[in-house]
Image (cartoon, rainbow, N blue to C red):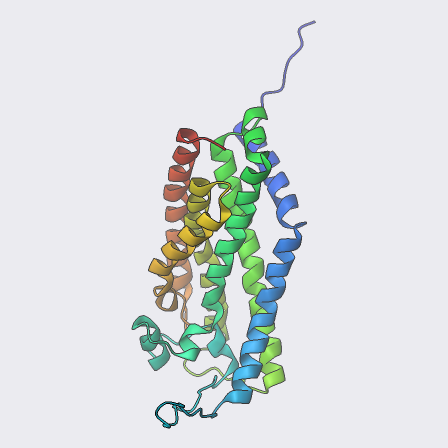
Length: 273
């Protein structure tokens, strides 16, 4: 009787790779440390800025007082600004303003660390080399890393949102919505989450280029991410609509496919050690 061997198709390989990466991501202590930081950051920012709002420091060299410290007017400012508002224009002009800089968009840089450490560990431990030798293809690896890191990034953003709500309550800031409504707020958060694959794809490419040199991949990711950072406020404003969410989705798919193909080429053309 002829024995038939089951063919290990692309779908089965990808499913297997996703299971491995999901288990590694959501059982990693580092991931939960990062989620905890994402939760704590908005609480600390909202509470501390509220306590220090209006305080003035004196320059010891000139003896002149500084401008009074400005805080957040309402809780949702820590998630972004209304398109066309003064805060939005300051962000577009790269003004070093507390409200325009200390908000949820900082988490895109935290995602860079998450992706680089997650992928870098594969090359440091030799897991990637063993994986490609035994069963997995480079394409499966890139798709799996992009998808799993996207899910991890979504959890980070949700943790920040929860922290913002709790921090706003502790700081006794108003939850008013000036220039936007609840639906806009939902689309704002959805747009930010849907935009993360753009950055995840960039960070994945930097990681497979640097491989076991995690410090180098983080530096490359942060430097490259800075080029797109100032576009985030206009793509994901507080008054976001389905158009913003759809635009972020289309951009993410384009970046994931394009940069994913480049990452695949890098893995095929370079040494895994």
